[in-house]
Picture 1 (cartoon, rainbow, N blue to C red):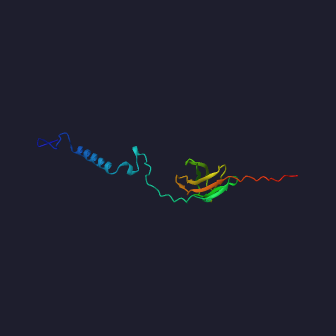
Picture 2 (cartoon, rainbow, N blue to C red):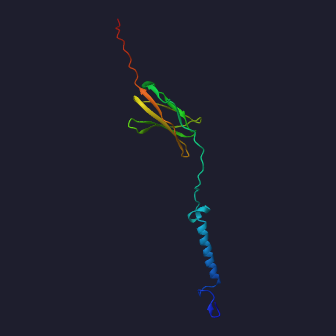
Length: 166
């Protein structure tokens, strides 16, 4: 350990193989610094880390209300159906605006294989309404349609005949 009466290294208890431990520790620290576990696909204790890459999803087909048409008027007893188109495989949420301005859900309807939906509009009071559709796909995307306005008017009262029957 001593050469010419002096220690070989600056610390007297080091020998050559001890320097290999210091060099190995330096390489491990450098490797951990430059290549963290998350870039190697490993998480805590070697568990796989979920991918953070974003995959571009195909664009949704637009949601459209085809009936009632914008500005339509209906008699209360002859209110039609709401129908339109949306993304195949999605679920459609049909909503209308209450008089206080809040959107209310009318129905949730699955879209057919042809991309069509239909819902019977019933029990609307007399007044003007805005209607919209929001389509939700199973993968979490959503698409809203433009709003459609329609009016419900009271049924005409039947006219009673004033003629007397003999």
